Length: 276
Image 1: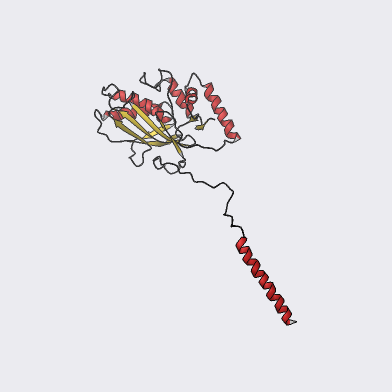
Image 2: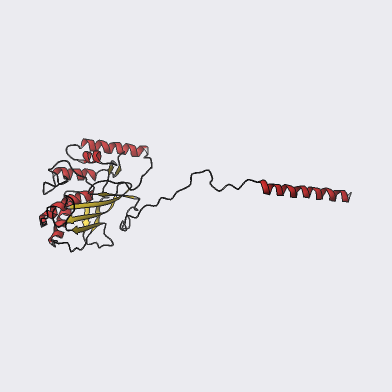
């Protein structure tokens, strides 16, 4: 009886061994974790050299850039707006349409490629930090810096809720003012903006020429007029189609118009970002 049980146990063990061998040979390859699912990607955003933000401000999001009021998206943004966002955008579009004639914000949005409003956050309490880069450009005069400061002050005095601090250095500045002798094209100034995906301006570079396109040396008040136009871009304004506005592509006037002021004030009453 004992021998019979041993024989049965040995036979069963042999069968199990054979089964394990067959399973090891013919079993399917293990499925990698997450197979069949969409891989999670990491988007690498190119460095736009945005200065460090002061404590308490919103973190810098993936950014876009503009030159002289134009727009060029750096990366697509696919988040779908919520129903509340869509209602808010509809109300913003209504207010912009109703301002046609008294402002040129409607024309700005119609002419833009991305239908986005761009502006600084309210910076009345924490001024935007501005640094005047040193220069050896021919015809540069120290009074040009005072002319620039007057241009900044004119926009602030008009009621735009953005103040400026001119004590920043190259490491803390949010706005850099640079100088060059002349542009290759018909212009005497250029503004390059960086903003996040929600339309909040993060930093800017303003470049001014010390000679006009015809080679004539710029005077101090000429610099102030050009700076008025470029600071308008800095604040988020694009060009106006009316030659009586300082934001006309080639400025024909020497001071802010009522439409310039109303357009800037309306822009800063609205939330930045896409209107689509």
